[in-house]
Length: 319
Image (tube, rainbow, N blue to C red):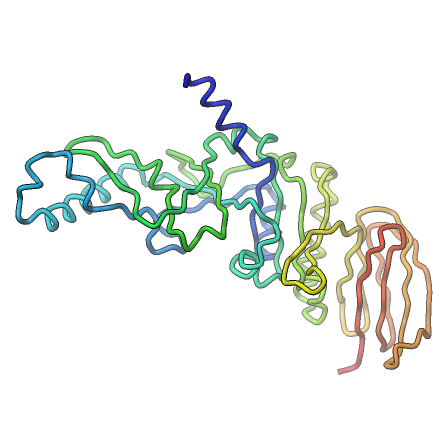
């Protein structure tokens, strides 16, 4: 296979969309300047990140197979090899993505137990950032090095090899070589969707957290983000599966009796108030754009958009 065909095969195998999970505060910082924080592979949450098979690296040297101290020599050799390589490549960084926005474990690990945010990316919109995009390979054995003494060590495969126990992450990595920064800008056009977790809409009583979400909405009003679709995660009926759905408005608590409704477009919302017996006792319509602040008495409130059939339940009661 020539290099042109190989390149086309690699590009066709790339996912059309990739996702990254954030805590809400992390998403706010990213959207402020669309700079992604990169990771040092040696400091990842997997303690066996970039580990290699000690028994494979010296088998090509010939004499080592007859040495009774093969195992000890091999381990010392590989440790020295790794140390020298990392010293020479201390500016190598990676950026980690996944193929799924509805992975319940990923929300738990990286998005503050569904209080955070998942951001969707289109790799084709920023070829520079995603130039060295590689799929992580999950294996039962460590990556091997078949190099003899004095040969240069190629770590590209080791950087994308992880234990089978991590395969649920369905990870893709962008590898940056000789990067003298822990941040790298990504084009706003590559950001295609912002997805709020299940718990973010029900995080009503944490007023400080509501402020973070509101600031995120303010950032999303910028012209460079006008194309972004807003979604939220919900649980499928009678299963543990998660699904993404479009959400044209969000409701956050300002204080004990005041809500803030933030919209992504001009629309009319219905507000229905129910008592403890679930009797409808109040109904009103609010036509608004961007942000409306309403003070409400005690009760259960159902705020809905008839066009999109989206609803948010709000509970307001004195403590």
